[in-house]
Length: 439
Ligand SMILES: *Cc1c(COP(=O)(O)O)cnc(C)c1O
Image (cartoon, rainbow, N blue to C red; front, side):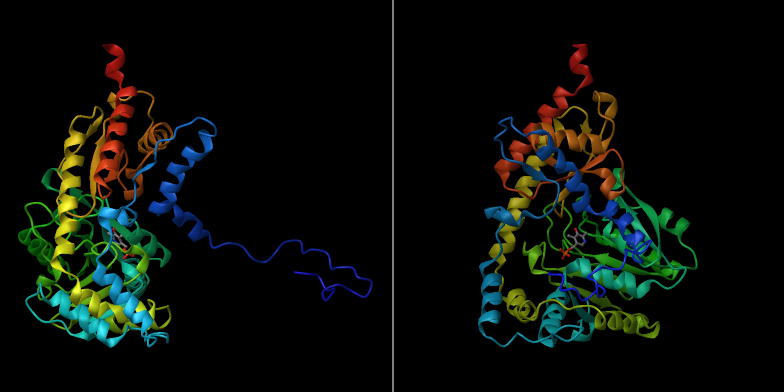
């Protein structure tokens, strides 16, 4: 911008700068970036650019870090979903603001879609639309954060919850998931850390980062524990129906009459369109607890002071949910089953790495590093940075999911890239192996 002299005195002189400017950043936000998967992966990847200026490593970078397979043709979304969005846009009828809670036909469609797996029918009033599951988490954490409240979170876990709880001044407490029991919730730990200020516990099923799928019986126990403690369950079901092992998907909402459940979901993962930004918060609460405790009113209030998902995406939702063919879902599950198998088999033969259980759902598996087998590797972060630099393979260090010296690997990429990536991971471990020197 041109300085037109408006802030200068008659002789064209400007006032001297103040001793100090009044503004400063929100320090709480600066600390939060350590909890972001994107920020951690950015750090891991920075080595690739910085230290390979001239050498001709022409191999492609293999992204085993984040769970967004949308760039791989074998994971392209359903044609029905694309036509639904195109039709909504071309109709010219969805250019206005949406209501805070979401368009009625879209809320009705989500209620109908989720009711297929539930004992009682949901109503559109049970559904609130959000900008993806991320915004659903943001809304719920904001609605819950009264002074002194605490929220129980799984470890390892998806740290976006911790970030949103912390940003709202709510304390996060951790219960363990048990690797030797297929990453089930340590219910004794839940009871041990809960107190009169605990408002809710979070479960992620199918699991990120563990690839676990909980049985009906385990979820029943989770509900009983919540009831005993007087808390409700936040069920992150963003990977709903993405299961390919012995346990099928059971929604937590089935147990809504035992303890109330807020189900969070989105189209990001099952339809492989994370950029479309459409998700939901759904109440499974036949006893009306959320109404009585004013949690519903609090959620609605928050939705009125934030932004809504794009209207034409909301308008496309009924057609997207109703018209997507079974073949699309079957195809996605087939590929995930195939890539989970490849991942499991290839990980078995790698020195310095162990994998406690085969993934049965979602897009991830947790892998344990045995640093005593590896030479000159300090920790999980060091492992990932050097792997990225030397082999152009990007993997998420466990610290990003609250589990130091483990790795989270995604298998949701094209099968040939996956094989290539895991072979490079193997060469890396071999090259840094201690036993190699002894032989
Ligand atoms: C990806 C993910 C989300 C966020 O989903 P969006 O709909 O893309 O915002 C939330 N929870 C978990 C566990 C996830 O893996």
